[in-house]
Length: 241
Image 1 (cartoon, rainbow, N blue to C red):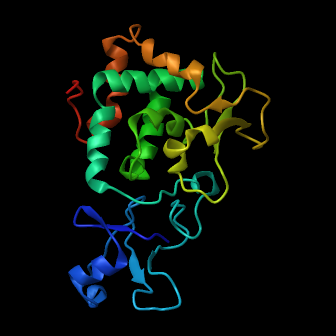
Image 2: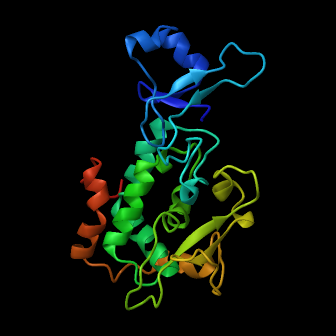
């Protein structure tokens, strides 16, 4: 369930949706959509004095906003959405220097991170509406991206593992940029889910942040690969602006 949905390109509450469309939305087959997965949603409890109004979400979709989310991504619940800001933030990420810095910070956290792994993480972030989280900031994206994929063994990684975001209980994902000092990334074995003995990644992490100043080694062939997600979502031009 979610308190907001997307309709006509902006976030709306159940009350706003019904005011725009009317109570015959089912007969008209007009529905708002989930900001995370795009499923059709239905308003619930708008005139109730016993429950808070919300949008009901189809079950068994694995979406972070459904009542049966994939446990891996259940933490991806924001306090609100800003759909107009979504494309602006994504466009900023796709500026060449920002893209390079984001990738470089991710590589400091995940040794040997390649362009395909970075692409998959960016795709999942776009799929789940991460760029539309209200108030999310560009600098925090690396710390979210590295939680969205498992990272298999390679010449820089001796075992497959994943990072899990630890934040205060019962808080929305917004705490990651509003109170980053209260959040950490911890590594877990990808196959068993057991914790690994390696240092926690603070947010922001001093060692990882050095990556923002270490991008000169990236050449055009790599940068073109990093642009793949940008190009697939309409941001082929990645010049700074």
